[in-house]
Image (cartoon, rainbow, N blue to C red; front, side, top):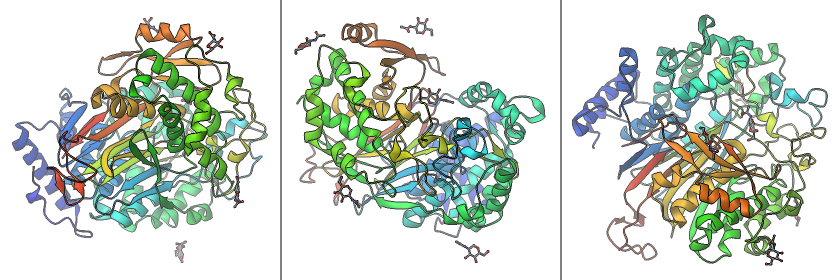
Length: 617
Ligand SMILES: *[C@@H]1O[C@H](CO)[C@@H](O)[C@H](O)[C@H]1NC(C)=O
Ligand SMILES: *[C@@H]1O[C@H](CO)[C@@H](O)[C@H](O)[C@H]1NC(C)=O
Ligand SMILES: *[C@@H]1O[C@H](CO)[C@@H](O)[C@H](O)[C@H]1NC(C)=O
Ligand SMILES: *[C@@H]1O[C@H](CO)[C@@H](O)[C@H](O)[C@H]1NC(C)=O
Ligand SMILES: *[C@@H]1O[C@H](CO)[C@@H](O)[C@H](O)[C@H]1NC(C)=O
């Protein structure tokens, strides 16, 4: 589908009027192309207003021209719209991130932080944008000694937000649309209202007390004292005002201007320590993406303080010693995977922010094949072991929340973003004058006096220092095969992210499952302590039942694993590019090559566990 009606898409040339026009054009085009208007978020919006039933948009889409797979269909559509307007995958990523921050504010938003991995198809350059929150200047290692709960809840749990600065930095590198255009859909949703979907309702219900206890949260999620439910319209007018100011003035409105001033005032009145200087000092960190060669693929991801890329690399390097994909199939393969995960969790807790602690040795261990082989020798097919066996020294990081989306554009530029406010609704505070939910990312630091559920000592590499970034499990990845884009993957769900992303990767890229099956397949998780395999047993929002088969459970029990069901562990989004069997990727020959870039069919999947939907261009 071409986008000839959509007009000029260069920076600084878009206005709201043109935007609305684009919408209408899009609406008409989608209608003509598909004989229906199912995937236009504008139409979904209208349906919402008319109270008509939801249209069933598929969990899987295909396209040669670009896909956005977010955990909310409206935001996938917002991203796809930016691609249709001629935007780079990064333009779509900025608009999608802003959108999920508005419509799923329990998981992410401009009061939080994110990691973004970008690979440019034309230069093959892969960059990692670290927009994670930092500890405020007034923070200290012992600041929670007298009140450990304040690390996770309330205004003291807030790190300095990095999301906006990071989105802007990535846009400066790659963006083609105007900054303002990227904000328009989200401003529209915040100002004119958006429909509450079941996943948001679930979170509102689950955190009713937190919402009622906070004037800001109740203003948005319990207007007039009534908790919002599915199909209700949610408004966040103050957030719309903040987004408008940031759209007009750029990030300085937030980091050195009116929005930031109001935010700091609200946070300090609530008892927090954030200052305007903290905001002015926030720096995005841009580095080369961390690359690792595993099982015939190259994975590109975030360096620490994310433990995701290193964690998955270690698991795959351990499993690679079995020498065959068959070895990781079936119940025995699952046992081996669980054992590798347990070892990985033990090792990854040595990590911390490399700008503050020397983790060189652990980084090289986690990517070393000989280190992986030593661990592999300790895995037995006939048994699992008690936690001590895995030589875990430090208590596990138990992070939460988040949202993940994957984007590939027509040129095969790829973006993988995981964004978060940590726990659902962050620290449980919404700044009333800005509409922004405060993150509780300070909860991801370790503190000296903490007694964690696993009774291990806290990780000193992850102790608080002013300006430091806390350790994270977020795992946004781009996957290459012979230097060609093979996929984009990532997930949300805290500590469960690394196991989930690893399982989806193995399912598709190693075991050959089709993309939807790879994502839907029941997953297992482990926290090392307690020594229990958590297996999925859940009926998801659209009615589908996901449960680890009995045969696998029984097999694991014969190996000494204790099992426990959980509902949802983590949520994964996936985009893959299919290579024709005739193509020689190494020599770059065969049809579908234009220059050095392969252009194959793209398939995108949003995880049914969160009821998201992908959108195709
Ligand atoms: C913040 O804004 C002031 C003007 O209001 C300007 O002088 C200053 O350079 C800005 N600081 C930063 C870090 O951008
Ligand atoms: C970091 O530690 C490694 C050994 O683990 C050492 O070789 C290196 O010199 C250290 N770097 C710094 C900057 O201290
Ligand atoms: C597992 O196998 C090893 C030998 O490979 C043996 O020494 C050990 O006793 C077995 N353990 C169990 C629980 O069967
Ligand atoms: C956060 O994650 C941990 C571990 O994954 C879990 O036990 C806990 O219930 C979660 N907390 C919230 C508020 O979701
Ligand atoms: C799975 O969950 C259902 C309830 O949704 C329950 O009836 C069933 O016993 C559970 N099965 C297992 C194996 O956990």
